[in-house]
Length: 190
Image 1 (cartoon, rainbow, N blue to C red):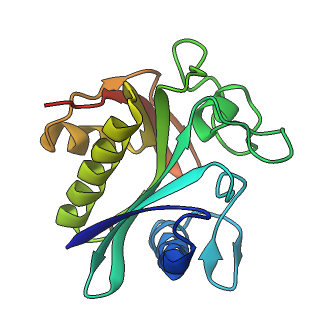
Image 2 (cartoon, rainbow, N blue to C red):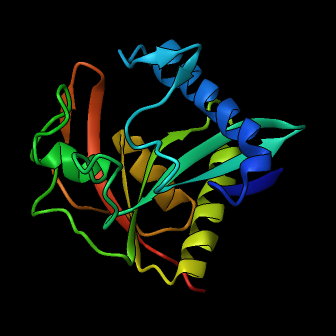
């Protein structure tokens, strides 16, 4: 299983893999979990999927995307200036339908801290682990200190199984799509 880290415009030749990842997200979040997210032509994407600020980390097996996640630096502003990153915007009540006040304190805005969201790894624990390893390797190369995550509580537990030391940075919250927990992991330099 290969891992690819893709940024625009440097990796535009592999952008078909990003399209496959957006399709995988539709299958997982809309199809399997039943979340009411907007899609277009079978692709789930949103304001945080901007070419300007996003990095995709994808696990590829047999030419197909089997798992992936999206990274955004916490000091980034999305095009148009209204949004920053998912945890911060939800915490500040700017995402309708998402629980506000996700975190114990104001989420960071720091070039050494990145956010990992939209983690999709259906039926591929190995794919999830490879994505996490790819994220950690990428963040080490950026000199990052922490990675934030947002997902079901089981995601934080899985990060611990993979050898990271996740710590909650907020309360367990929920909405009609399920339970969510914001957490952070130190980037491993070992």
